[in-house]
Length: 240
Image 1: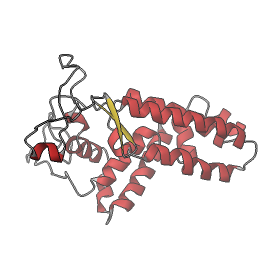
Image 2: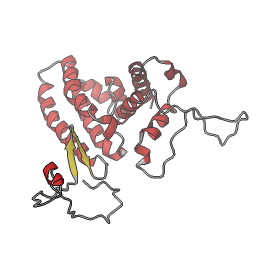
Image 3: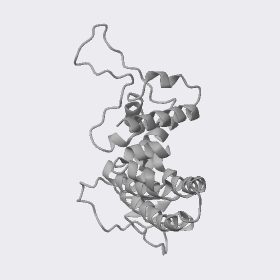
Image 4: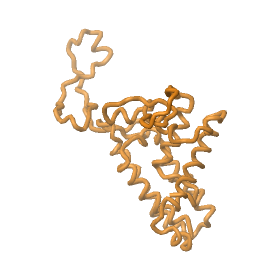
């Protein structure tokens, strides 16, 4: 796979790279019959479909197709199962599918993740009764908060923050005098020059930390920190 920026269109589409075997290399490539390497635009590795631009567009399409398939099953289950069981099925099938690899593909563009969020909304409408659905019509953030389920965007931030709880916490040294031009930030963020830099942990983790109240960092472990962040995000969504 040829890894490159999507803005770089001047890359060779054909390659002549031969994958030599162990025996071929030690025989100094005499009578070599090794085949050329196959070049692809995307490849599935450990359940994640990686594309050559690292945009995760292909993987998100696959996730959405699986969610649409599950959505058809939920339409039938709604008339058979009670609400508590429906929530259990949702967490077992839908949330597990979204969570897998989210710390990696959750760094992509917001517009890509919106496709997953739209499908999440359709699932939530099947989890609640008609009265609740009418109550939160058009106010999807409040519906997420009512169901105590995080959208894929906030869930990605929560997982990334918990994963790097002990990393990238370099405090910003501020001058003694207060200046209006100084940003009220707590942790120093990594400087970037392109959108690849915006997807690195050195940039994302401090950015997420700076949005949280400082008392959140008195937790003893990352699991407790993740729980508190989730509650904080749900409260923020109910207020918007």
